Amino acid sequence: MANSFLGAVSVAMQAAFGRTPATDEAAAGVSWTHAVTGIVAMLLLQAVLLVVPFAGALPEALRAVVDFGLLALVMTAVPYVVMGGAGLLLDRRDRLPALFLFLALVLALSQLIGLILGAFGVGAGTAMIGILGYFSARASKSLFGIGWGGAILIGVLVALGTFAASFLLLALPTGQAMLAAP
Image (cartoon, rainbow, N blue to C red; front, side):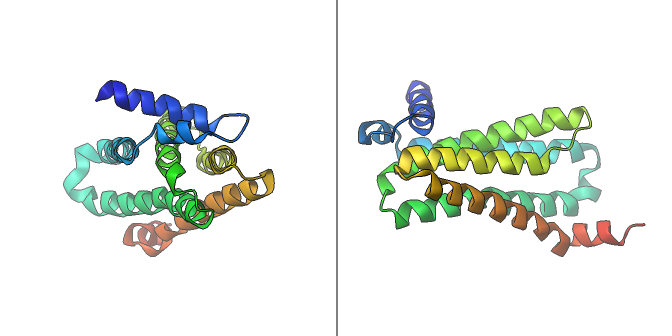
């Protein structure tokens, strides 16, 4: 199982970064099982990164953990909704597992990079959203076989949607408390 998953990761990376549109064989090398496994692993990493900083004060900070978890879930769903919608509109359903696995890898790596940068006091949230937009555009160009114009549009929609989703925090109780604090 692990070798099959790692092989699918390799295929998804090669298909997303190919110079020419990915072949049907390359995209078919990734199944929905591989894509869901990658997404679940990324969500588990996200959950650990959300809970561990609050572990000492978890009963009191439970509301904040729930709010940040909801925010993270919505922000994580945006690229999948945009890219999945594009795949359905372009009738490239067979390429979606490879694309979703690639997105899971990009999101997991961006979370780890954000953690490392945060340890040094560098806030790179907006930059990470831009990088997600770039990788979304690059993967959609290769996996969907579209031109740069369409790929850039998809990348911009992913970046803007993710950025807009970040404002959900302002509507949640934790965000309201942060706004009310002096």
